[in-house]
Image (cartoon, rainbow, N blue to C red):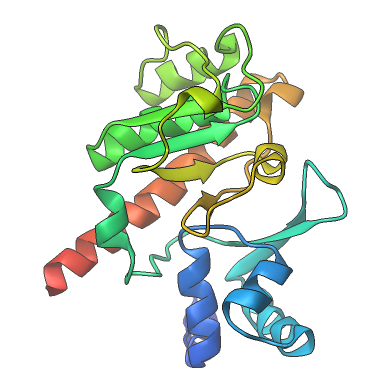
Length: 224
């Protein structure tokens, strides 16, 4: 990253409201409505802050794969570990990843979380498939994790009372009634593409998010 871009990003993060938004997005994608409510911002002021963050390449916006009228704001995780405050408590808690069919994204996320964080994670679906998709199993093997024995299960069969729920599917996130402590990662469904590269991109997106959280928690631990 060139010096000018770094300076513009630091300037954008010099505003406490924008820094709070970035901290929030470090763990969970949010709709503009959620951000406005969580940070007590009028819609026009939120639009201004999001515009500044987008101009310097810190955030991106995308339409929901479920309700196409809804949009999500996500942090661009490349080279940025933010939102350090809540991470130490979250990183050691049980985690359940959720998508619609529990056949690709949530299975991959749980396996990558367990390997990277060192804490076992599980997964579930709102409408589980009969088996894990072969493309997900192959992508997991290329990434050095094993999904050969994994089986989909229903979200209602999972005890989430003591777990951190992370939805990795817009449709599942919108079907459920999220607790305020849940996180959401808006990850495209690789099964709709079918290509091996789509599954590898999913692994890469999940890995970047998990590594950002792991790095943030490590930095917090070193400061304590």
